[in-house]
Amino acid sequence: MVVLSERAAVRRLHDRLGFGPRPGDLDRGFAETRDRLLSGGPDAGAAATPMPELATPPDKPGKNADQGAKQAAKKQLQAQATQAVGWWLDRMAAADVSSVERLTWFWHGHFATSEQKVRSPQLMLAQNRTQREHALGSFTDLARAMVVDPALLLWLDGNSNKAGKPNENLAREFMELFGLGVGHYSEDDVREAARALTGWTAKRDSGTAQLVAKRHDNGVKHILGADGDFSAQSFVDLVLGRPESAPFVAGRVWFRLVSATPPAPDTLNRLVAAYGSRRDIRALLRAITDEPAFRDSATSLVKQPVEWLAGLLRALGVRPGSLDEKTRAQLLTGLRGMGQVPFQPPSVGGWAAGGAWLTTSAGVARLHVAQLVAEHADLGAVTKARDKIAAIGDLLGVDSWSGRTRAALAGVAGNVRQLSTVAACAPEFTVSG
Image (cartoon, rainbow, N blue to C red):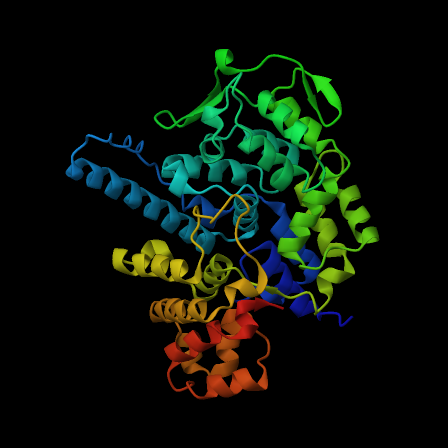
């Protein structure tokens, strides 16, 4: 194992627990940086970027509605969805300490919910707020909130889950993808768990979810070897109390923040112990960063497009909220070209990982986005520098370039915006080493 230097380990902390360093962030030590990232305290930058207040989305026009009404409703919904995405990207760039946003992004992928089916940017933002509130807290509290979250209920057909005719989608995905993992429940458990979740109904007009008593099955259920009149909350507690749950959750965090290679058994035991009975996310993250594998140079991760863009915006001091509408639209088009737009995961399983983001078409889209960001960045420090290649590295938090990358950068060093564009697309920045 090749152990990262202190500075490289600090950069990895920023990449994995945040969206990458800003200029000057790498001058702090590992312990100080970790404490700062895990504090989750007040953040002036994030506070100055409040969540937008969206109007209640229009009802879906009926079959007999005229084409004009349908188009107007569709246009309003698209405008709100675009506003929500633009706001979150701006907050990712604005946060002084980006760990809360980074973990909110992680939980968005874990409890993957898409606005394209929910059809309510308002509810997607409400879910986003809930995930942010619990981002570094207790997974118990987060899971209890998510199982009755209005957007998740609509996404997984909770509104059609009623006594006598249960819909199994939410129960199945909660066990398989959110709390236990494949192979740790039976089809009978799914059917019985669906009964426990009957009656919970989301309302788009009020932005809330409520338990409709007459739709709820009050009978005794047999789930995961236990009998009882389980409710949504007691179902969550039952699932998270299973011995397979903690290793599953710790493993999912490890997969996204450390390595695609699962943790060794002794490592996993330490992570589960830190997570503990409180299911403490902050303690789990601290334990992860204590592991030797976290400092192993071999545990590199390809940045997801949103992670890459947020890091680039932060490094170059570009705020999406300050850009004109056309440029913001081009940023979103670029993200779509790379295959990832916030609030629009492709399935309940979330987004891909690793080399899936390194396709030729994604590379072309990335180049266009990097060029767009460079056009709006203040690159004065690079212009004035004698060694412009080193200067752009300082801005991006890259200490050294490979010979091949350096040669490519040397070819465009005469134009700092081209230099920034090429550097942002280089492996040293697109991969968290």
